[in-house]
Amino acid sequence: MAKKVLVVDDEKLIVKGIRFSLEQDGMEVDCAYDGEEALRLARENAYDMILLDIMLPKMDGFEVCQQIREFSLTPIVMLTAKGEDMDKILGLEYGADDYITKPFNILEVKARIKAIMRRTGQPMQPQVSEDDPNLMRVADLTMDREGRRLFIRGNEINLTAKEFDLLELLITNPNKVYSRETLLDMVWGYKYPGDVRTVDVHVRRLREKIEANPSEPKYVHTKWGVGYYYQS
Picture 1: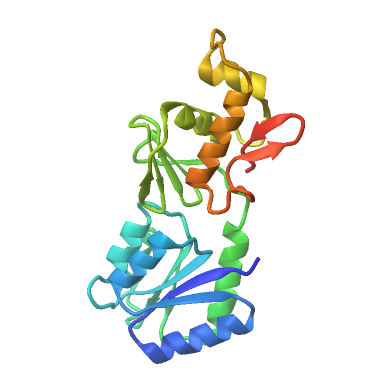
Picture 2 (picture 1 turned 180 degrees about the vertical axis):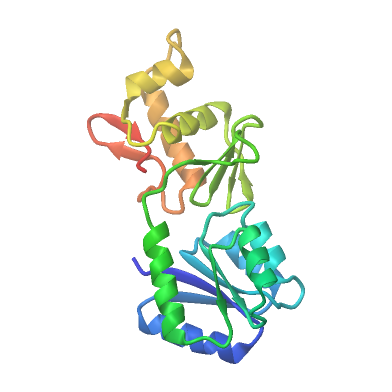
C-alpha cells in the first residue's frame, strides 16, 4: 500500500516540488497551505507522515502540531526557514519527530522521511499517555478508559458499553486470540443467558463504527475457527 503524506506550507512552489518528488517515489500526497486546512486534513485522513512548516497563515505549525498530537501519533517533521535552535526545540517539545531547515535538498527530505517511516512503521502497539494513564492510543484511535469514550482522529465514536468493553479487552491484550465463548464470559459474564452469536453481532457492529473498511479490519481481526484478536 502506498505511503500517504501531508505536506503543509504556504509557499506553493515548495509544496509543488515536494509533492512531485514524493509522487515519483510512489507516495500519495495531500497538500495544505494554512494551519486550519492542515488540521482539518489531519483529522479526516490517516497519514504515514506530515511535513509541517512553522510559519503558516491562520494557525502556526507549533499549534497545529500540538493539536494533532491530541488525536494522532502520525510522525511530524517540522520545516523551518529560520534555523534557530529555539524553533527546533519548540517543535520537538510540541510533539514533532524531527525538523528540516530551509533551504533544503529534496533528496535529504526524502531520506529523512523514509528513515522516520522505517523507525515508526512498526506494528501498532498500544501506548499509554504519560500525562493521563487512562488514555490509551493506538494509531489514530484514542481510548479514554476512565471516561469510557473513544476517539478516532479526534472524532468521538459512540460505542455501547459492551462494544467498549470488547474493544478495550482486545487492545489491551494484543495478539491474544479469544474464543467467542471466552469473550462471552469475560465481557457479558458467566450468567449471561445468550449464546456466542451475541459476540459476532457486537464485533460486526464495532467494526462498522471503527474500521475504515470493515471487510479488511485494522483493529479487530478474526482467527477463523478460533475467535477474535487485536494484532499489534
